[in-house]
Length: 305
Image 1 (spheres, rainbow, N blue to C red):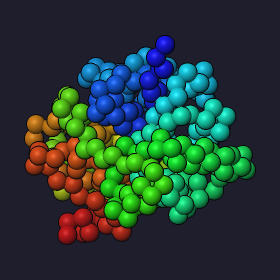
Image 2: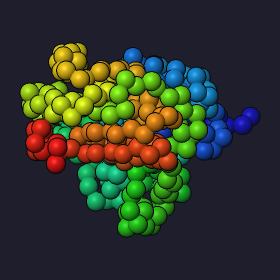
Image 3: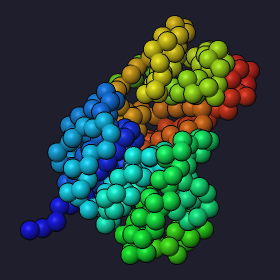
């Protein structure tokens, strides 16, 4: 009997998009073990409607032990995950492919080449997660020495990083959202100037009023479509919606899917995030532009420069 193919264990909408790109690039139908959240369900439904090479989808809270044990090739969205550490330490998959969890893909690559600890940047980990890190890294390292670990990423790792990973027999394959662009379903937008929402206020990195000041400054330059971040609370969305000139549209999917295939050039404005890497690739050839604002720019005078 043939061994089951790969399974994708993903926990965020962007990770789901990465799994869809991997499946299309390899012409492999991949079953999905996805975190049970409304955003994940909506994104999975949209990808399937666009023809993603997905097999059976199984939503989970926690670790899908039975499914993982049946598949020896895991496509993982978050190498820093404590649940991944535990599952990898116990089940010891034969092959591991890491897709993007935003810019954390680069940080995790540095972990595998021994340049940083196995922890998300800026996060202090609990004792259990920290205790599991050496066991998970050992599993990954053993598989890497056998040529069974690789990255499938939209992020530029740089020649030095790729060479260091290659020395450890970890492969790196770049993709440019080819499947996403080819299977786009354009979203109707009330304004071609698009402001991307952010979870920075809820994460404590930006004061709410300062964030709203930035959005007001952008809207003062002309009407904007505002696409909320998936983790923005209702109060933040409501406050943004009350700003004159702002049209809040929640597509229920990652902006990479929502904006792919646009029929008109867009001007996308965002605070620093992984979208500054992903969206230019998705919007390539559309004549769209992307502007990145720093928090110090969050005033009308600065935005108009």
